[in-house]
Image 1 (tube, rainbow, N blue to C red):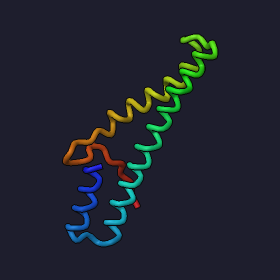
Image 2: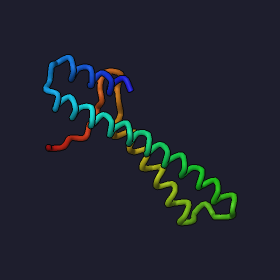
Image 3: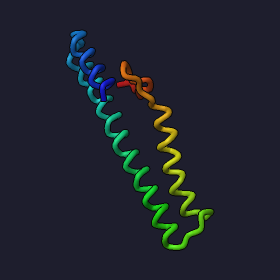
Length: 96
């Protein structure tokens, strides 16, 4: 959260045009939405694995493997978008 607030603050204090500040805020909002959505999907995947195991599915079943892939994607996503207290390391770029 701190890197996103810092980026917004820097954009505003640099007297960037309103359009550029809006773009920075939009990108940061997208990052926040992804962080929330992906972690929710990972938590749901863990719940689904527990449910499948309790209902008799084997640990090597395709259904369980599919749920574990969701969690692996979350884990890799955390590594790809790692943040430090000072900055966001990985920010998606796009052309307007």
